[in-house]
Length: 480
Image 1: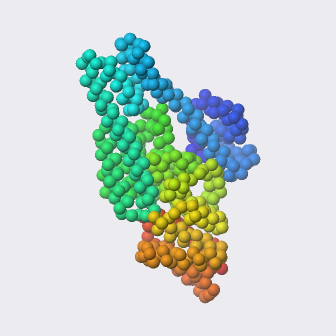
Image 2 (image 1 turned 45 degrees about the vertical axis):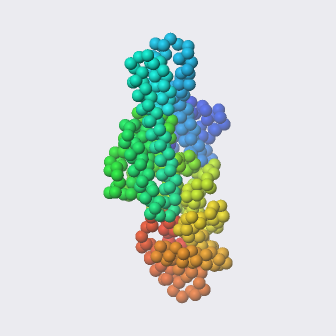
Image 3 (image 1 turned 90 degrees about the vertical axis):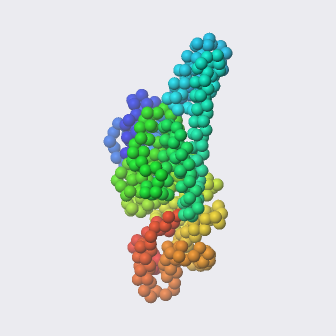
């Protein structure tokens, strides 16, 4: 709640009253009450839930929707000045045909300054094209011709940077599932191309785009020792915050703040500074569904789901995930065409249920995944998912489905190679011992294999089985 409460406390009185009135008149009385409680009282979450007469899931949904409403209001307030400028650009021909030349030039120069402030390169080319025409018979014609040419080139550089961003994260999705060295090389080359593209211009927009990619690359693909850009990541994040503050009316930056909150979270997680990472976890988590749906052109949002599972395992709050997901993903529709993200999402939902001992529901998520998309391109991911499904059948004591699946898993292991999937090998042994009719030393054998499983080295590619935890309760269930 701390992050949302902080945002609410920073609202001006006028903004607070406007949001509250909008909620009250729009039939969202409970959201309005929650807003007022967070603004005017120091009541705990539990106390507010009792006052509203809602359960944990409903309360989480209220918080998420309130956060969304506040963001929508702030964005609307922010877009008005920008919209006015764009309307002026649309009326340039009207100015040229109806105003005296001196007035038209003065108007365009004022518009030029406003567009530079917003870094609107596309619109600037229109202004310079008009100024060039108005100075046909003067020495300034060459100056405006140069400015026009330069901004056309800059506009193309921005377009290229945006294309490189989306291409990089599409390829990262494939790399995250395979760990393939060819995919990695492609990512390295795209990172270098982005750096070279952004070197040409001293542009805050290109800086933001470049570091959406470069910081992520340094955290998940190449360590700092081999990175081309060795500026400290904390310095880059701080500079980005300064840009967002300076250009607070830019609608793209308004949304990209969330990407940088995610990068801060991953940066502090990467260096095991978990207390600092918690400062950014809640904001990303509350926007999780929208983050997965709308931000895959600027980052790899599915990585957050893996981070959530790692965090839940670390702080021993695994059993709260499946209930939390009901509220978080109430209106979320996964994109099945984005196969890497869909695989990660479905696996995340399955593991969340597994941690909450909902084995049947966990198996349902995995079965749906295997039926919804073809995993032929991702043999390692397919093997991991089938092994997780086999574990659910094992815990449910469904011998028939387990035996059908384990044969498929063994065939796939022979294709991939035993040396490439030691974690799967150990899990298979644990499950076979669990379902064997022999009771002799079963618990001792399983405990030995669990120790071996826990000692395995992390795998670079998608490996959800390594997120499993064999506590006393799970081991007891396997032994019975």
